[in-house]
Amino acid sequence: MTPDSPSPLTLNAASERVHAYVSQFREGYFSPLLLLARLSEEVGEVARVLAHENGKTPKPGEDVGDLELELADLLFVMLCLTNSRGLSLERGFERMMAKVEVRDAERWTRKEAGE
Image (tube, rainbow, N blue to C red; front, side, top):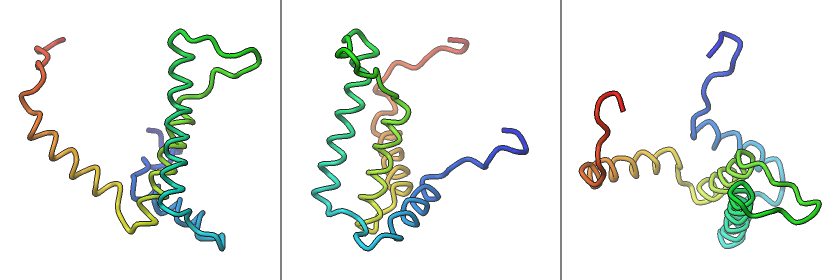
């Protein structure tokens, strides 16, 4: 990171930025079921990009897509869902990592030094 580059974005900072954006509109957050539908739609977009990157030929005139942007769309909708429910994606992520780091500690074959 250079002195001119922004500081790393935390999930909490992203959550606050999404909230500031959504809060400026009367409609506010969509209902949980509509957010779930949007989440499903975005997962489909990720699937489409990955399929195009891994052998499926796009339809004539169809863009291959932008995986980075589609994953960011997923994150936006997840942050909307967590914000609307008063949850923290950052806190949830930390809890999930603590769970898998213990539960799956011996599940996979560890790499040797230098691998």
